Length: 355
Image (cartoon, rainbow, N blue to C red):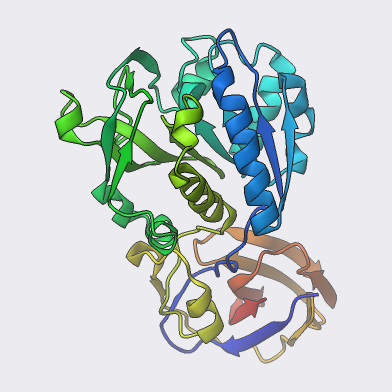
């Protein structure tokens, strides 16, 4: 059960919901052997790499070789789409499961031909890949630059640095994808890597990026064409960095709430997340608000209304009662909330920290 602390809010405070601690995936699903042209040279290298990571980092991985393996997609923390291009997902029921998974908070990594659906599935092209897809091939040896936009995503910047991935990466004997459009600047997109200008005639040549899609998040990279991409271990380190990032709670947060444990847990500090809210207390002596693990109890004997809202102004509880009642908080996410009790034309506010 959650521990709850409360304090009267007589002053202006800066608050934000807390981030969870760093976490690695527990169950990973690897999907391969898909579509009309499935890059079979990448099947075994990706499977081997993920097996190695699973052993080293302590997660489990399941390998499935057709779209039906996605029937249990909700059982997994993270999905790896290994060259899932063209008509990889022809079953409408499977498509619906993928959409629900990603939009509902799922995390995924897509290699290389995963951007090559060629119009077979509009959602995959327009939503997951921000309206871009493969159109032709470029050089087979090139340098990758770390994109400055990574600084706008401190959580990704942190794991990238911790894994020692550097600012410049040399890629040999693979192929650059040339895309129909550039996803930079599209909603939810953070560019991570671009092709070095010496190796392309495209001024801004995207290669790896992160896409937020409602509650879910997706990392796409043009890497993963064949076994040459997996030599030297760089892609393994990069994949682990992406896994780490996707497994964390990367909710934008504020490190200056004044609550030490929450400030320390903030992994993606953003100034916009520090919301200052003024609260005034109007005396309502008859209202007795008590907090116990997992619940709040109001013992006011007459009609009243209770409202619990988060710092975004979103109401999580809004109920009217006549007499004492106990309200369960077991389904309320950890964070800072305001409890407001209204009765007899007056109100009382409390600030509540739910762990």
